[in-house]
View 1: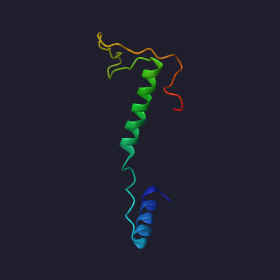
View 2 (view 1 turned 135 degrees about the horizontal axis):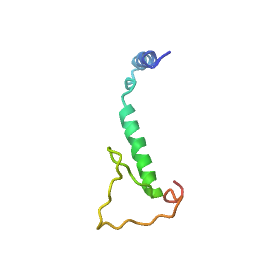
View 3 (view 1 turned 135 degrees about the vertical axis):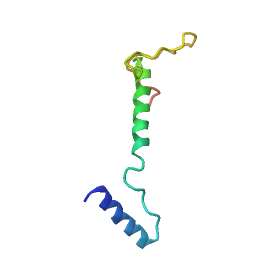
Amino acid sequence: MDATQQQMFDSYRAARRGESAPPAPGTYEVEAVRQIRMWREFLAVLDGRVKWGKRGRPVRRPTGAAVPQVPAGSRGPVGC
């Protein structure tokens, strides 16, 4: 059974029960990919790795901004 058939089955079952229909397949895929990319960029910042631009050049940080020092290998607050 593919995703479309499963969605049709779930919609039918929800209609029989008087519930709202589930979202169509692929509705939240773009948002999920965006969140994964943001999480990976966040981890790169914590590890002190350089963020690369679209043209293969490192993105420069503003010269006046103070960058907090994070110990190598640290992924954030305890419990994350």
